[in-house]
Amino acid sequence: MRPIRIALTKGRLEKNSITLFEEMGLDCSELKNKGRRLVLPVDKYEVVLAKAADVITYVEHGVCDIGIVGKDTIAENNRSFYEVTDLGFGKCKFALATKSGTEFWGGYDVKCIATKYPNVARKFFESKGMDVRIIKIEGSVELAPLLKLSDAIVDIVETGATIKENGLEVIEDIMPISARVIVNMASMKLRKEEIESFLTDIEKAKEAL
Amino acid sequence: MRRYSKITPEGTRDLLFEECNARRIVESRLSALFKSRGYNRIITPSIEFFDVFDRDSAGILPEMMYKLTDSQGRLMVLRPDNTLPIARVAATRLRDMQLPIRLYYAQKVFIQSPTLVGFNDETAQSGIELIGASGIRADLEIITTAVDALDKCGAKDYRIEIGHAGFFKALSDSLNVDDETREEISLLIESKNYAALNDVLDNLQNNETTKAIKMLPRLFGGEEVLDEASKLSDSKQAKDSLNYLRNVYKCLDDLGLGNKINIDLGLVHRSNYYTGVVFRGYIEGSGVTVLSGGRYDKLIGEFGNPLPATGFGVEVDALANAMLLRGEVKLPKPADVLVFGEDGCEIKALRYITELNEKGFICENSIFETAQQSYEYASRRGIKRFVLVAKDKITESKIQGV
Image 1 (cartoon, chains in turn orange, yellow):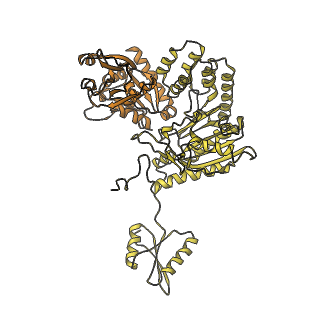
Image 2 (cartoon, rainbow over the protein chains, first blue to last red):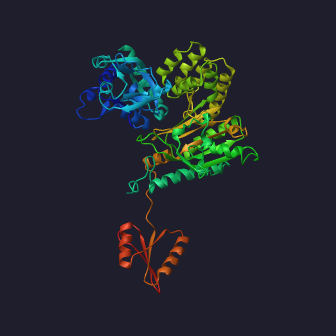
Image 3 (tube, rainbow over the protein chains, first blue to last red):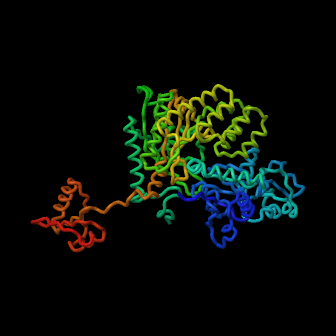
């Protein structure tokens, strides 16, 4: 049987994940000197480095058993797996922001929302029973209200500095975000002992850090 | 311009040769198993009225269904589920049948998945429904048949997880929340999302029930799970559910299935028509749920004739893929014999093929103009024997080098 395979989100969450793995007592030397390799042995596990959205795809299909990925990606892609642990790092939030000093909630005209996360935005306004027009933007979403393409944005806010510097302000928090551990549903049942021991270890390491 | 004339729609595909073989093997083994237990096959239409599936209990969202309209503009769908049409048949055409009714099916379902996620929209399912039967005998029959189904399809390692819809219902009934929140809670339990579940429950008043529900996703494993769970609630329905599940588990353990069966009290099906024991199956080599089922005592009543029932469905394609991955399915073999009729002997050659067929040989009719071309073709295809049919005689030869 192949080793338990863990999909790790490249970039923002990578460093914290490695610190956590080391706290778990795992030998991460290969992972730290990865070069261009994408599949790396980490102790008895096999680690795969992937983009966030791909982490959940690999885990849902079961080609990876465990994934470490941000809540933002999970919320945007409505897919099936177990979401078992909040790792507590990579903290930020989804928020609704507009140009400072504008009245967003008033009036009867349909508001236009620019976002990289159309599903999160749609769900948020649905829960308010509010009809909005959503435009998907790929890059710096803050531009859209400045160029008067949209009335507001739904985006990830970490410190709020980018928002403020561009003359925007957060008018409502939508959802807190942090790194999560996800597990493939079949793996959880078929390889219960190995996965549970990983989860217990990671939980302990999280507390210790 | 016919832009889409050379490709199949997303979520569908052509099954070729060994893939066909794999699906056929799985389907025929399952059908043989179901038949041997006294189940009779039924076939329901691929196209049904939207109304059959448009019910809260089904858990099939309208956007998941392939829709079309009939000549009167009525809304139709491609069958997204097999249990609902069978419930419809049981409540209507079979209402006077002697109970219990044992039915099996082997037919496709159509579900619109989100685009580009790599899942098929058209999948083959086989399954059974035991209708008009309540009680543990029926539940055990269904679960053991589910185990046998995975076994027959060559699953090297598998797990069946069992739960009870009544346990969550008992807990959630004593929560004072609206249906939306209840649904959210059940989704969070299903995805074992401890963190978000805690957030939702922390917004409610803290009591014994919220504490118990927080524990639910963690309640999976062996029999010890039932001991832990019994401490969580004093409600009679909860206790009854747990006792029933313990009974089922013990029986399966006696059968030697203890290490294959897990209990998962956080098992909440997407379809909420389940009322009693529910279960799911997983096999090595497949990352998805390959089997799911359970007891649904209220569903047939929704179609006008209340009957208790239980059953399960198997994802045939998932089992077939696992079989392909294990390398158990072979490419179709070349024919045993190539038969060539000389000019004027075409019909004689075709007759001779019928004769060989009756003896059990697979024969191809050569469509080439000459014996030489036919012989070369047989050699290329790996056909071992060559038969030349002439006016006065029939000669047979072995193909060199095959």
